[in-house]
Image (tube, rainbow, N blue to C red; front, top):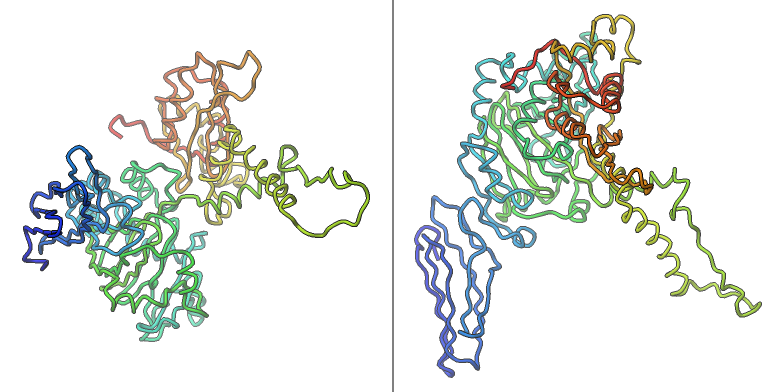
Length: 567
């Protein structure tokens, strides 16, 4: 059926010898269920429905698979599409086995429209104009105080500074997959005393460039707050960082895949995104990487483009493209001054968890991880030449050692909670001296902080409503509540509230009559701050000590701002 012509379609399947007929009707406008009626018990008509019903203004395709049910009493099979509207239009099975058109919608309320689309973790989706307000603010104010997004000049200065920001400078020659080059940091002009002010003049005319900055939210608090507000429907421990790429016309980082969900937000300029229509496995990626270069480039991308396995979109300021893990994509700047914000969302893999578990095992001093292989039956039949075969019994005993040790870990909720909380909140990249603890600051720096350079005076200021303690930017945090593992009778009614920050864990024992501690910890994690309203009720000494520890270690830092109820 033609994409532009078909609105109502009927398929008739008949078996004349048994006088049996099955009719499938579908209406493009309503997409209500269709029915196959079987008039003869002795024959079941199997209908395979493969249809694409699309008009020029609705890029929707029916899934390859369909849901069905059979009612024996009436011998009627009901066939229905696995979707009901264009915002929730993919069956989950389909994402892993076939290609499909990527939906594109106009966005007026990003969180609600994205959540209702059904795209999360399943398929890419483009939301037009989701952040046009922020893009306009950036263009008008050029990174002023009222703008959550940093401007081009700020980012170039950040990349050129002596800070520990992770900066990658990527160049390539168009149409040459083997020409990609990666340099950490910006190129320096030796003729100007090591300055990078003329760095772009150093490049050959035929080489295109991109600057990629990680952890920008750590250096730009306004961006950190904006990401927190905009993506508050996603847990903090699932958020990675705010990465920004800058490029002039032709710049990009090539076709590649990511292991995590990502939102690609066009800040300024225009960029073309090519997006693959299917998931690329790790094995396929590894065997398809361009050899001999420092950038992970998929060597089959141009072929997939020619074969129609890739869709292309042009993103304008304020547009956002969401990509689930393992979907290939390639972005190319179509204008100078192109800036793209990438909000990455991490998730631990089983491989990462096992690696972390093995690290913890090294320090184990008790438990089944220390058990060793034994063979007490070795001499049960007397002395005789030993067999050197690794038979089923030996292999089974080896498996049992590993299985019992892992089961002990998984069945102990208390141990696994501590393990998992530290794993999912630890930083995924090297950060030197961040956050900076008060112990590591110089005397002059402490003096410059005033009352915020001392733990006790900081808490006194907060309780007097003289400021706010903010969580250090770019630090993941979470909390959990566990029943106390101690089996003594006096602890039956106690719980443990655990606070996980940047891969560390702090515990607070919560008595049965303590109704304050857990809500306070929840508020601190959710709002990423502590202000005077936290002290309206009496806090336990353990909770106060946690605040002091976080201040001392730099995870909380004070500012002279009063609490605003509208914040």
